[in-house]
Amino acid sequence: MPFMVCHTYNRFVSHRYRTDPFFNGFSSFKAAFPMLSDALIEWRERRGPDDDQRSDLRKTGFRRGNFTQGVLSCSNPACHEGGYAIDRLVDDMVRLEETERRGIMLCCGRETGEDVRRGPIRCPYRIEYSVTLVPRPEEAPRERVSPRRGRRGPRRSRVA
Image (cartoon, rainbow, N blue to C red):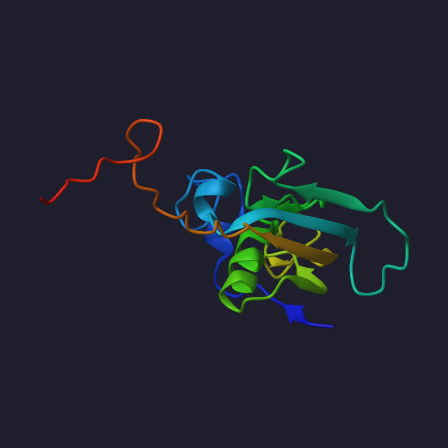
């Protein structure tokens, strides 16, 4: 099972601090990933590595109409600047020419609060995800047809 970690992207991850919905500066899924027809994402959020509770399976996708942001929100109320950078995952899959991937993604946020004595600590929340990419079908080049004149085609010149 692949393991993905967000390293130094904390300032870009939270939807509260992003200026564009997708990390690469595009405002829509279609503009960010023109080679894809759809991206289907299913995930379950866990509260930490020892969380065994079965949370609801959640789904998002471009064709479903709810893949409008590149970051899935973290549900931890103590998490700041967190979330799951699904757009980076999709971009990585496109770059590697993958159509399916399963794995675990850690929240890129940090917890701050009165009970945290040493300063902010990494948010323990994570998602188990499954991503399926649907490539855009390639259009076959159309044959060039010469225009016809009249009922029987173009006129031919007669040579005497």
